[in-house]
Length: 144
Image 1 (spheres, helix red, strand yellow):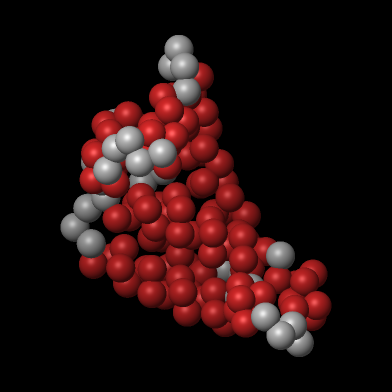
Image 2 (image 1 turned 45 degrees about the horizontal axis):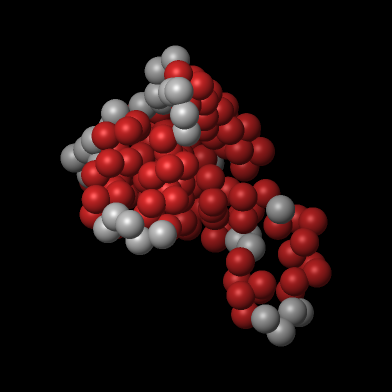
């Protein structure tokens, strides 16, 4: 299975921020792309005799290796170059979208919450679009 390309993600984000698709369609199509990526990850993990990723995470958590060394080994393990676009589409965007997908059910509950963290955790559709515009700009201007 092949990893979805940067261009596929850029095209999808562009369609949403340009209002060519609605939020539900964006979410569904993003989940399909991310699902393809996660299937690729699962295939790789299943090909290993042991969970090298977990061992590496543990070594970093226990401060047996530096962050620099962890990052170097992590990218070697996955056979990827350290490119910002991958961080955005495989980490930042799923987190951002998770914060939106739960919004409708819980936003009312947290609106009046005294905790700034709980109030600021969830994003509105407008905030989602603004964040995606920012990420789109970053993706389009990056050379990787």
